[in-house]
Image (cartoon, rainbow, N blue to C red; front, side):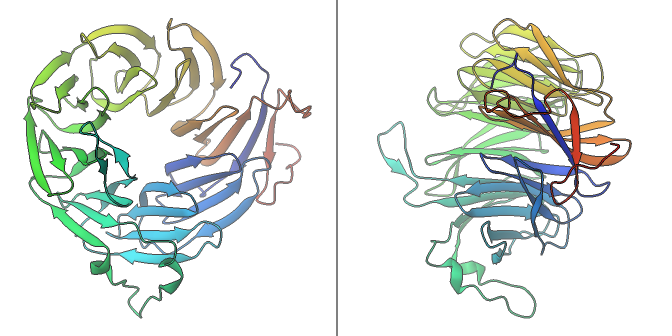
Amino acid sequence: MDSEAESRHLAFRAHGRHVVTCLLLDSDKILTGSDDTNINMYDVQTGALQKIFQGHDGGVWAMKQEGDILVSGSTDRTIRIWSISSGECLHVLRGHTSTVCCLAILNPATTSDGLVMPERPLIISASRDSTLRVWQLPNPDDLPTYQANSSGDDVSSAYLLNVLTGHQNTIRDIAAHGDTIVSGSFDCTVRVWRISTGQTVHRLVGHTQKFYTVALDHESRRCVSGSMDNSVKIWCLDTGSCLFTLQGHTSLVGLLQSSHGFLVSAAADGTLRSWNPDDGTCKTVFSKRGGAITCFQHDSQKVIGGSDRTLKMWDINTGEHLRELLSDLTGVWQVQFDERRCVAAVQRNQLTYIEVLDFGARRDGMQDRGRRIVVDAHGCEIEGL
C-alpha cells in the first residue's frame, strides 16, 4: 500500500447504529460482524451489500475465515460455520454456557520439534464460561450434509475434541500455533496449553489485574500479554518464566500484535508502542492525542491506529506521523489493511459506516480520487452526501 498515494475514498452505511465488532478483508470482499446479530458481506470495489448471514440470536463477537468457510462466535453461546459463497449456515456448534469471546482456526504447521501439528485443521473457541473448546473443522465433504433440527442444534459431539478447563474467569484472548494455545483471562493468569493432550503446560502468573490481550511468537518460543495493570510481559514458552516486563503505558493495554519482526502494543492512554522483544526496551512511541486506541494493524513499514475521532498512519521504524486517514469521527471500531486498501469500521454522527481507502486507484486509472464517495446498498453513489 502506497502511503503517499491519493486514495479513492468509498463509504457506505452498515448495521444501522450498531457496533461493528469484527472486520475481515480480502481482495474482493469485506465481512463485518456486529452486535446486531448479523454478519454482512460487501463488495470491496463498489461497497454493494452482497449477503447478510443471519442465524445468531445474539451479538457476533468473533469471526475467522478459512477459504470459503466462515466461523463466527456469539453472545448466544454458539459457534456457527457458514459457506461464504452460498451464505448458508452449515453447522451450529453448541457447548459453551456463555458468550463465545474469541476464535482461532488452526491449520497444520511444523512445530519447533519438527512435527506437523495439529494433524487436521481445528477450531479453538474461548468463552466467558472460562473454558476453551477444541473442535475439528468439518471437512468440505461434510458441509453439505448439515440439516438443523427444530431447535437449530447440530450434532456437536462429532466435532468436539476436547474441553480445556482451568481458568476461573472470562477468557479474553487466545493465540495458537502447532500444538500450543495461549489464553489470557480475567482471572489475572495466562495459560499455555498442549492441544494434543488438553493439559496446561504453564500457568503464567505476574500481572496484578485482568488480562486483555495475548500474542504468540512461536519462532522465538515466546508469548506476550497485556493487562489492565498497564504493563506488557514477555514469557518463555519452554520454562514459563517471565523474561521482561515492559513499562511505559499509563493505562490498560488492550491490544497486542507480534508480526513482521515487530511487537506493538496499544493502550487506553492513547498511545501505541513498538518494543524490542529481545531486551524489553521501547523502540518507538506513536503518540496519539485523544482517547484510547481502539484498533490497529501493522506491517514491516507502517502502523495504522484508530481512537475516538481519527484514524492515523505512522512509519513503524521511525515513529514519524505520515498522514491522517480519517477525521471528524465519533468512534473507530475496527481497521484492516492489505497491500492495496485500508478498511475501517467507524461511527459518524451516531451512524455506522465502512470506509474504504483504495491506494491503488491511481495506478488503475480510477477517477474520483481525493473525495469521499458515499454509496447505497447497491453500490450507487448517493447524491448530496
